[in-house]
Image 1 (cartoon, rainbow, N blue to C red):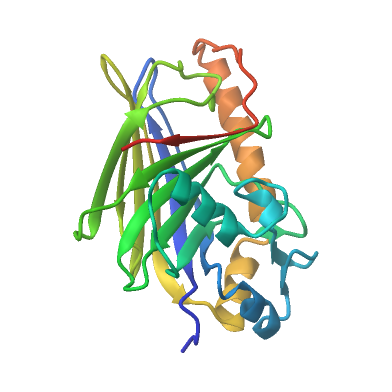
Image 2 (spheres, rainbow, N blue to C red):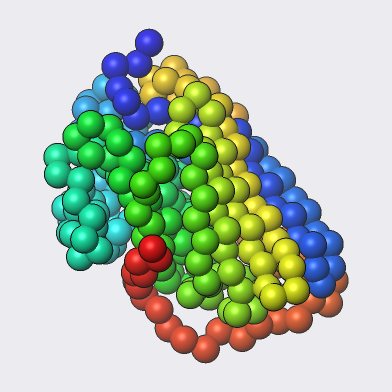
Length: 256
C-alpha cells in the first residue's frame, strides 16, 4: 500500500466531434495526481522518477503554472490570493502527464486546491496548445458534492478546427477511486465536441508506475503525434480551418 496521497490514474481519453462532421478517437493513457508537497519524497522513493531532473519519468515545475521553474505551490497560492481564494496551509494536487525521457505535452492539467480540512476550495484548469501557449481557467468550489460542474466562454485558441466563439462545460468527479473529467464544447447551435478522461486509481508505487510505463513507453510522443494525426484527418474531411490571430503566452481568468 502506498504511503502517499499522490496516486496514478490508469485509463483512456476519448474525443467525439459532432459537427460540422462527425469524428471520433480514443487512446489509452495514464496520469499522475501529484500532491505537490510530496514531490521530493516521491523522487527519493522511486528510482526512475525524478523532480526537475532528467529520468525515464520526471516532473518539472517549468511545465506548469508560471513556467519559470519556481515553486508551483507558491504560484498557485499567489494566484488564488489574487482571486480572493484562501486555502491557508491546505494541499495542492496536480493532475498531469509526466515527462517521458524529458518530453511531455499536457493538453489539460488540473490543479485541485484544498484547505487544511481537505475541503476542495478551487480548481484550476490549465490548458495548453501546440504553440507553447497556455491559459488557466480558475473556478471557486463551494459544493460538497462529488460531482462538480463549471462553465465559461472559450478564451484561448486550441484547435485550428473550432471557432473561438464557443463555450465550455466542465463536468468532473472529485478525485477518488475513479477519475472522470468531461469537457463539452458548444456554440449557440449546440454541442461541437465532447472530450473525456476516465481512469482507475492506483497507488503511487514503483511497481505500479513501472507497469504503467511498460504499457505506455512512449506516451508523451504518442499524445503529440495523435494531435497532429487527428488534425490531418479533420483537414482531409474538409473541416474549415480557423486562423490563429492572438499570441497568448500564459493568461489567467477567474470564472466565478
